[in-house]
Amino acid sequence: MDHLILVVDDEPDIEQLFRQHFRRDLRSGRFLMEFAQSALAALERIADARDVSLILILSDINMPGMSGLELLPRARSIRPDVPVIMITAYGDPQTKQEALRGGAEALLTKPIDFTALREEIDTRVGRFS
Image 1 (cartoon, rainbow, N blue to C red):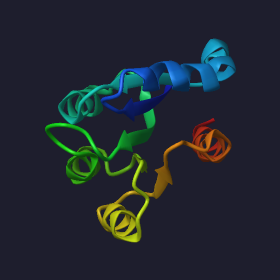
Image 2 (cartoon, rainbow, N blue to C red):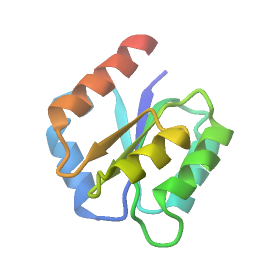
Image 3 (tube, one colour):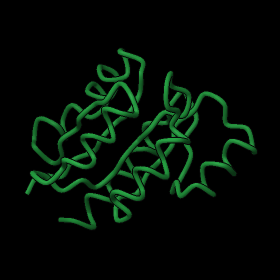
Image 4 (cartoon, rainbow, N blue to C red):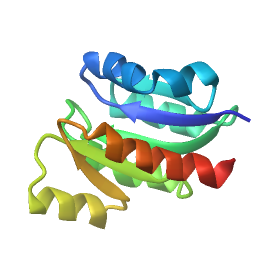
């Protein structure tokens, strides 16, 4: 079964950035990466992810409509087994505390440290391989 990482961010260039950084992994089929540009689209995919093994959700916090912090408890209620890592341009202590209190496993700040993110992903893929 394929391992899926769902990236939730309303910025259209995020998909290209992630695909570039994880190019080898995606080409080799080590994992799949899908992108949702809204929290509502993400919730639909999370609920519908029966065709793959959803192993990680990466979500921006600041999005129009439903924020990542509002998405977090809903995603966790649908899939409590899937870790969620929040991503934000504002890594202040209050935001971090709110994300962790809401069930996030970690909070990464933008610009994203792709080395740290790769370590997080490697840990998840290793658990399911």
